[in-house]
Length: 268
Picture 1 (tube, rainbow, N blue to C red):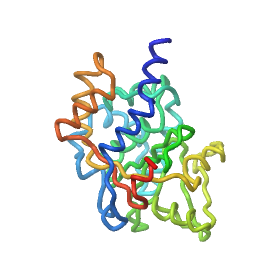
Picture 2: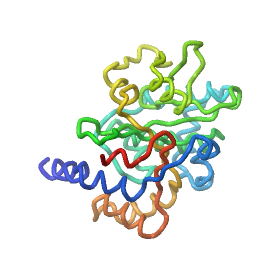
Picture 3: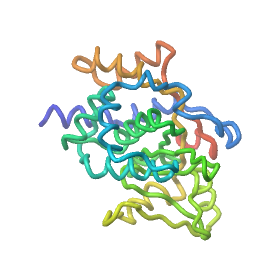
Picture 4: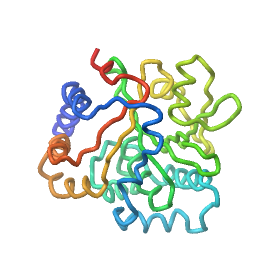
C-alpha cells in the first residue's frame, strides 16, 4: 500500500505535471484541428485482437444504423461492464481486460479504450484533456472524447465515463469547442446522460467542464501500437513517466494542441 501511494504521489507531482505540458504543448486554432482524428494514426490492424473479441459481444444483436446510436450503445455497454478504480497505465488490451473485470480504471483509461473501439467500428474519434489555467492543484484534469457524427456532419463531445452529452438551448449536441465557447460567453449549456438511471454529479461537471479556468487541449499523434509495445517491455520495471519520456526522446510521442487559449497561461 505504501509503495502504491508513493508511486501515485510521484506520478501526480506538480513538477512532473508541469514539465509534461512544457514539453508537449503547442498552440493551435479551431480550423487547424478540424480534420484531426485518432484514426489517422491508428488503423484497424493496429488495434489488439482483444478489442475485436469484446466488440462482437457488445454488438452481438447487431449495430445501430446511425453513428450517434452506435456510439451510445458502445458507451452504455462499457459503463455497464467496467468499474472505476486506480489509474492503470497499461497496454491497451490489458487495460480493457482489467476494466471489464472490475479492477479499476480512470477517465483517461476509459477514453483510451473508447478510442480503439471507435476505430474498429469506423467512427472518427479523438481524445481531449483539460487542465486549469493558471495551474491549480485542486483540479487534476479530466479526459473525454469527441466523435464525428456523419448524420449531424459535426464533431460531438462525449464523456464515455458518464455516458454524457452536452446540448445548446435548441437541444443540438455540442462539440468541444462549441461547449467551451458557449460557457465563456455566459450562455446556457445543458448536459445529461443517455444511460438510464446514471447519476451525474453536477459539482464534477462544473469542475471538469464549466469552470471558467478550465482550458481544453486535443491529444494528437498518439499511436496505440507504439505505446503498447513500450509498456509491454518496460512497464514491469520502470515508472510510467519514465517510459513516456523514452517515447518522447524517440520522436514518437503524442502532443497537445490548445485551440482556444495560449497554453503558457498554465504557467502564469
